[in-house]
Image (cartoon, rainbow over all chains, first blue to last red; front, side, top):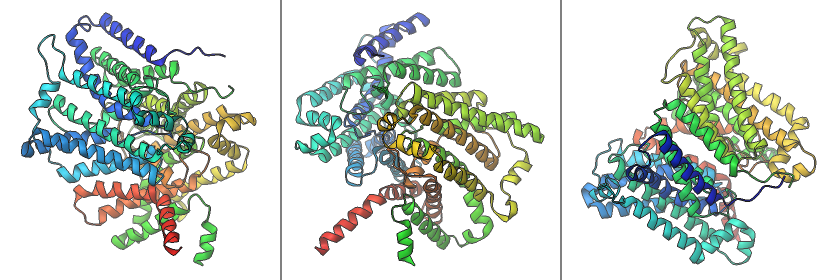
Length: 313
Length: 324
């Protein structure tokens, strides 16, 4: 049975447009510019966090970062706590540096200690949650930087929310990173054939450590931005983004096996997933039913183009 | 003696888990002398039985080269189903019906996962992530908020020690004996072959899809059993109760020496891995560290334990260099 090859990114774009139209048909007013910006703004949070996830998955070798949710929470909480004392700029820098460091530690664990990525980043989740408790002692007091509220918060009619510009900037940067830099070329090489990459002189371990560090950075940036939206912090702030970030990458057509895919796909994947959950929220279904439908639709999406090669080929 | 022990353990995937478990229990006993009283130790072990069962199912899936992220949600679903079907004064027949329904649901959930992975060829991580939403939603549908109770007699029976042997050991025996028997049949080599290299196994005539389907189905069934054990130990229903068990089960599997890539490891290691996890938690709780630090210390210890196999190699290599 030969399967026609459809460009997964185009498929995902078609899906996103279809979902928008479906939402518009079901709920008048969904297609207003304001509502579209709302959905895109929510998608930006997932998309920013999934930027790092894309890199990690591209690197192959069962690469996955399940610590992104906890790192996002940490980023938000650090920013929240430190803004009152040091001001917004330093606070955000510390939060981003913490994410970078934790991601780097993930990379070192994977490369130097040989811990499988899934388990390494899971274990790191526990450590980060522990760090959060130890640092905050359960008391979440602080201040939301005004610049973040301005970035994410409501905008005058017709104006593009700042967070979307930030996301577009990030997408451009990641695309440049992947297409135009040595790191990008090496990343695809590592993801496609690790042994060949090693033999052709790619410093595989360095590439991997950098990749996990960037994932930590993206996750904490996501957390910082989310803080501007929630305007308060809680211990489970980033958790709902962990597995959806993986799903967004896959829906965007990046192969979990690594070496194949792009951040543009992930961008569309994040929009598709966010649309789906906003659509389900808008239908005012009970939470239970919403989760079931989300799961079933995700399964449907995956079986359209998330399938692995058949064994008999 | 130690040398003979060393020879016996060399090459066993569970060797490290055994050492960690024994060391952990010793450290735990030092910090908490009451641990050695029979009631306390068997009670502690019994509390791990639900995770032992779930992690055993996870082991089968991992051995076959997959992973199941939906097991925790499936435990929640079976837990609330069991409690909902049980009246406070249920007769033996009613209890049996409720238990069968919960187990059947576990099996159906496992078959759904298996069908997605083995027949539709979806990637296990994302496919079971998607089904976890289905199970979690269904659990919320059955019981929107925690509640319900279990007949007191059942709870007492769970904490009893038939023939003087605590129920934990009966449970583990009921798990390991069939497993060892199954490993001697054709299924054992099939499972390890599929996990080692699915394509090669397929080419040599192993029914790969069928093996995958059975691992997920058995994992679902074991999640159902784990849910029953969990219900009897907590005595109530909670639609979110299984959530954390997914990740713990994976950590236990890896601690137990089963390779996450599949094809190597076994159930005994996983049982020991669960014991290690729970002793670590006990030790941290009894160390007297401020509660804010406990999660962090717990996490660091788990990470070190996960890395320990490789750390040992690194340290040994460094030693050779120093000697050379």
